[in-house]
Image 1 (cartoon, rainbow, N blue to C red):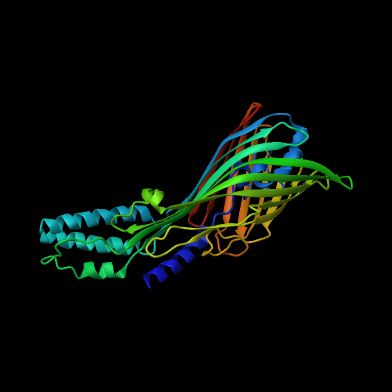
Image 2: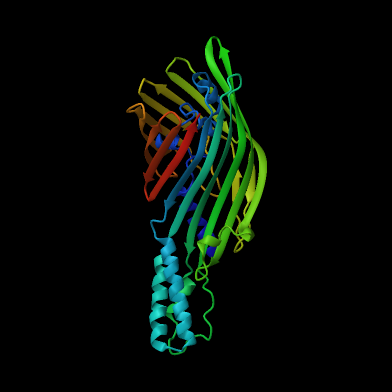
Length: 396
């Protein structure tokens, strides 16, 4: 019954932990995660390689994105601090029992019951990413080399009522000879995906309309983590130990199309991870979970004025990272204003059409320092969630 209850709790918790996208890039994240039709030259390889051919005639520079780093954290329940308090109370109670100190036994017993009740139903989540890309100044076949990694992790406190009952009934004058590990558990479920690939773009013309087609063959490594430990021994830093990890790898493929019906309008289509893959986590406490790589198809449109860009993307299919969790399907919208030749201001919004994830609002800015260096930053927030992306790029 406790395993079933925990699974149901994880399913509910996952509503707010499905990552919004498969990549991070500061300009795109500032604009709600859009990019299928509006990505910059250095970000195109992450989402729509066809866009490389749009930028190729405009520049003959190398562009190096190194690095882009991102993180999103939600520990609004202060779960990790509460685990620390519980472990301190457990150790103090154990010491008091070994010293046969009746008063301390009663006090630390009560503290431990309070800690268990405070942890009941709490959770935390974190997403982190890093990436890099090198765009080559080729004209016939515009191309870029890219690497990106992202990790999604969630932590859950699974509190056993039996622990609370046992401690409540513990007699300080007649304590047990040894204090055994609690049945309550701390659990971490996580998955990391790393891509190494090359993005190629081919400029075409159909009925005198410019059409760009892109393809990104890539190698993927997937690592899954399933860590579970008694609450009094739980250490979130241990979740990535090899004994809690499964890994697999595969060859995968991204495709993209970009059309320019008019000089200012770009329409885009992106199909990422065309080959599916499922990986089962290691078993812990009799439970396993299944992480999956599955195709994600997104369409987008972007309109550029001289100093203003407006753009929107929408996922045509739903996706769920862990198959046991509810799927998400996002609509994104964003914009950019070129305030000066060296300053860019951006805003965006992301909404889950399935209503299984919270709405996210984003904002950001970009600075061009001379012709060779750019600094881009973005921030995001929603119910009980906050995130940021920072990147530097070099153009030479």
